[in-house]
Amino acid sequence: MKREELAPGIFHLQGGSNMGLVVREGRGLLIDAGLDEDAARRALRVAEQEEVQLEAVFLTHAHADHHGGAHFLQRRLGVPLYAPALEAAMMENPVMEPLFLFGGAAPIGELRQKFTMAPPCQIAQVVEGGPLEIGPFRIEAVPLPGHALNQMGVAVDNVLFCADAVFPAETLEKHKIIFCADMDAALETLEQLPAMPYARFAPGHGPAYAAGEEIAVACRANRERLEAIRERVFQALAEPADTAALVRAVADSFGLRLTTATAYFLARTTVLAALSSLERAGQVKVEMVENQLLWRRS
Ligand SMILES: [Zn+2]
Image (cartoon, rainbow, N blue to C red; front, side, top):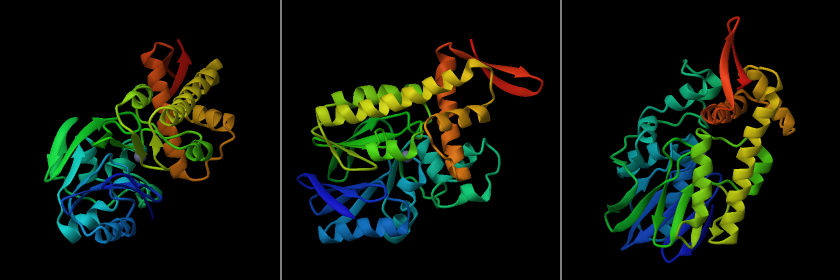
């Protein structure tokens, strides 16, 4: 795990899914908990090296790769967990993540593995956006909705831990159809993020960005990708089509091969988010034809 000190006592722990560690008065605030026990143990080792006791863990959003390690930390240390509303409910009832991906039905086995279903944890305090004091930590919970419905970043001094609001170029290149629950909200978040008053932006994946051009370029690339996905969904609707045909058309248009059911259901969620955005804008509508749910331009 690579550790970068972004500001005095503010560490960005970079691994598969990044975490943050803030150190004040010999105590530590962890931001996100990693995918699993192994990831959480790596963060604990950094805390030990810094000679701090963990005071609390702030979980930014209910995706298993960010809160999967929280169960272990809670059992091992008894630390209180903080999380945004809605996301907190999913963390306490983790079947909700694969349940949503699978359209609300009992999820298939593949969706119940650790990348989409974390072990449960208990949230001590549900967080609203705004200033928050946790022991010696004065932080700000910053709403960054879109990638997850109620995702929240954490600002400490001049650093913003911005969760999965913005992905690095490698992720855009690899996944093409990046995960998004609410496309309009995600676009709005990406619009606002570069103007927020922080010196460094520490994402959930990839290295931290500097203020100014660096974060602006990254946000623009993410915005352009989401807009391209939405545009390709619209293009694919020259004729009415069902959701499955649209997932296929958009994946094909990016030269993307979806090789697992998990990858398929993640991509499908983003396509549905695009359709929802287009419907809200009055550009598409849903239509029932002979027991088929079809999307058509309106
Ligand atoms: Zn995520």
